[in-house]
Length: 140
Image 1 (cartoon, rainbow, N blue to C red):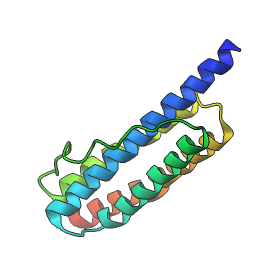
Image 2 (image 1 turned 120 degrees about the horizontal axis):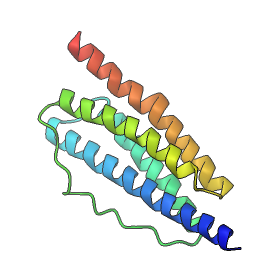
Image 3 (image 1 turned 90 degrees about the vertical axis):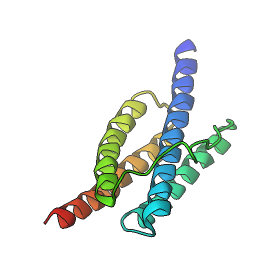
Image 4 (image 1 turned 135 degrees about the vertical axis):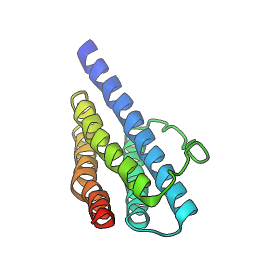
């Protein structure tokens, strides 16, 4: 029984960390848009970050857990250029995949696992390539 409780605590901690990561990414991408205007790929991906946060919030609600508030607005700064913002985003999306690998190892709830897998997939197969494409075009 203690093992089950620890796994449940792991699931809760994983949800919190994932939501904080989505909040941070969303705030960062909003700051880029605020600074440089409605530039791609940030305008598309910031909307995806909203959907990702919503998917996680539905899991908090389903499990009757109080989610952390989004306190990231005003805590992030925009990089000096769009290219620098994309470089930072590439690094963040790579770190995001590692974070999800780690979180998935402690999550026992099948619905939460599914959400985390979907978010990891979106990060690696849509967001990361979008930022990489921008950098390739801007350098070539």
